[in-house]
Amino acid sequence: MPAEPKKSLVGEEYEVEIGPVAHGGHCIARTAEGQVLFVRHTLPGERVVARVTEGEEGARFLRADAVRILEASKDRIEAPCPFAGPGRCGGCDWQHAKPGAQRRLKADVIAEQLQRLAGLTPEEAGWDGTVVPAEGDKLPAGQVPQWRTRVQYAVDATTGKAGLRRHRSHEVEPIDHCMIAAEGVSELGIEKRDWTGMESVEAIAATGSQDRQVILTPRPGARLPLVELDRPVSVLRVDEKSGGVHRVHGRPFVRERADGRTHRVGNGGFWQVHPKAADTLVTAVMQGLLPRKGETALDLYCGVGLFAGALADRLGEKGAVLGIESGKRAVEDARHNLADFPRVRIEQGKVESVLPRTGITEVDLIVLDPPRAGAGRNTVTHLTSLGARRIAYVACDPAALARDLGYFREGGYRVRTLRAFDLFPMTHHVECVAILEPVK
Image 1 (cartoon, one colour):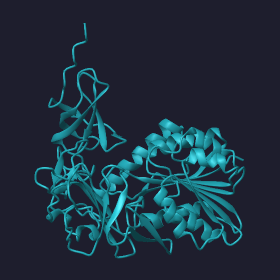
Image 2 (cartoon, one colour; image 1 turned 90 degrees about the vertical axis):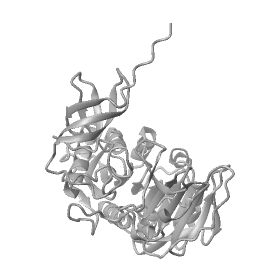
Image 3 (cartoon, helix red, strand yellow; image 1 turned 135 degrees about the horizontal axis):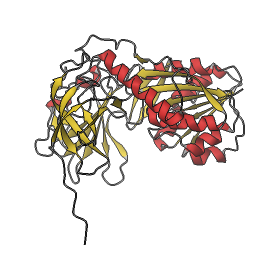
Image 4 (tube, one colour; image 1 turned 120 degrees about the horizontal axis):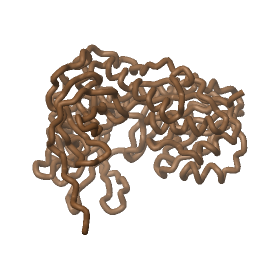
């Protein structure tokens, strides 16, 4: 006989004591029966009523929202955003926490991941245990930095209104303003327009230029609307069959400024979202690597060439840089952005397949800025065989970073310093820069 389906617990409420923060924008609690709850909209030490949003009897854990706060933390504030809260917009995780408390929560997550996945204490990782805000982001409780230069709006199929997705849902929360959106995005007026027939509208406001761009993803068979926004803007569209991005009007790229250089970023390609992020990370990487004239360097997952350009600038005419990037358009942009450096080469393909084919057996410096999943054991093992005197690992996920640091240790590299930056305020995301060196 087939097993009976397990009873859903969605909607069940539990009064619980909230424990430590966990990776992912929630805290851990347990029901009286000992079942683990991952609870959003709460803070460590609080007593709350948690309502289950996902899960069934016997599941390893349940997901829940704190719907009533019985005993509040001293770090709790009224969420500044009217669209934040249980069942509402999923864009922010910590609107209800003081800014300093948000950074402490992120530091707790980094410390926990380092200990659990790499067996490292903060001291052993050369980390002072703090998460540093970006320049200009240290604001009083109740004020929100306007940092998000790229916002992906979802469109409600019934009303044609732009909004943001609810947490772990395809449902759209209609909004009239996103508080964390950069001024250049807000002033486009996306939320006021009718986007009937569109699946999503991505808005981009470049840093260091006046370039603005929207990328439209139409629903199958829908026609593009005439885009009239409150500021001049380029328009691109995503092809429903190929997924490719095509220019409709204006430039197919935006110009971003960082490290004293202008970078072309085409077709909505990757660029750091916080306006201070690119400069902050370049500074941290260069301070950690201390490049010397004439050295050789690798820039892996190089995007449009941010770190490759910074390295080439500092290594001088006799230095050489090889960048590897999988995205075709990003490679074209990187080659364009670095055309004035004759000793920079950009190869297209996945790092794990291109790097062995290059035949490189030794290098002085390595920068890697992998996607959220990290670099993985095989790539790290290859990197530790190249004898670099220093490696800079830029990470947007503390769990992937900690796991990969464990692999580097197996390959004879130790963490010299680790720095953490709050480049995603109000969310659980955090950016880290680890500098590694061979064990003497």
